[in-house]
Length: 133
Ligand SMILES: Cc1cc2nc3c(=O)[nH]c(=O)nc-3n(C[C@H](O)[C@H](O)[C@H](O)COP(=O)(O)O)c2cc1C
Image (cartoon, rainbow, N blue to C red; front, side, top):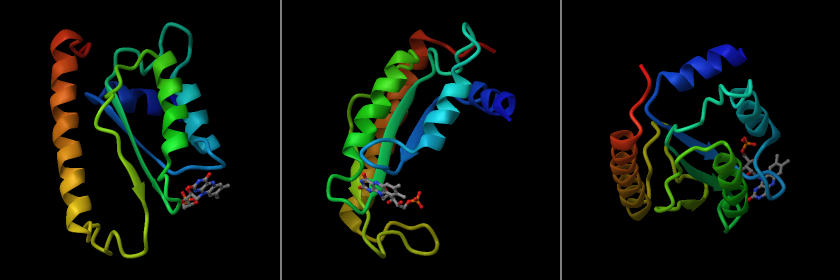
């Protein structure tokens, strides 16, 4: 499974981490997955791989603490990380409907802008750090 995960990362231009917050940190399963993909030594899947972090939780700080911790991990993994925009989303019932649509117009607009910014960031990084084919 770890090999398949590493292969999946190798096949994409970038990774967008979407996380909840568990006890002011990231879920253990996410940390475990990152740890596996970062090894063996010298074959760290995140090295030079652009990434960004986003998350949502019921709390009003919307995963801010978890995201800061995840940023620290990705920094050590040598992943070029989008600094801004940041996105801390407080999840309220009905925010996303059954078809996956964001029901709050200002949140939808914010997320659209986030994805545009992420696209520009990925293109910029890949210009100087092209993917190995
Ligand atoms: C063990 C545990 C700890 C949590 N700790 C936090 C927390 O520190 N801050 C927060 O905003 N939400 C916290 N939550 C709520 C989660 O962020 C999340 O919204 C909720 O668990 C639903 O996501 P899930 O189905 O992936 O667990 C916690 C949930 C669990 C199960």
